[in-house]
Length: 178
Image (cartoon, rainbow, N blue to C red; front, side):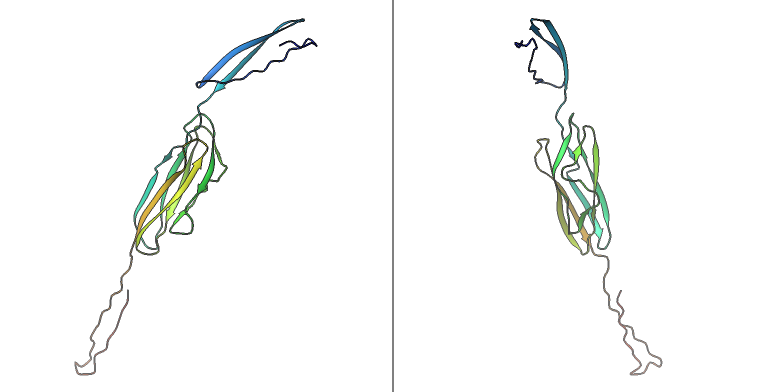
């Protein structure tokens, strides 16, 4: 409203109920006349962070070999999303080769690709996960990782008989490991 000194002060709040653009105006009358001020604003949808796939099966991988797989983190909403927790697998047979940092801001429409390796050292099943939380209201998410290390070598013992004259004592035994 008008002040004693002839100026006008108004407080305006933009509180949209749906995404889209809005235009409007407001006026203030003083002893010096009426002033009209135009205002506009644009509301967007909140950020949304789907992850695909949520489970990665590396299948059977020979011990001593490395397999690589990826997943995507996409912001399909209209506003930015901030990563509040990112705990990749570490210290085991699964390892992240990319970094999704806590505090990272993913703009609307952006997609990040995260990569994980599986390097089994022995035969057997293995599981782990990459924990991710963001400020999009989607809660904690875990990309489940699984794979099976399979054996790559065997040990075989072979006995050969070698004799020059076919007589007793001419036999030699040889053990060979592969």
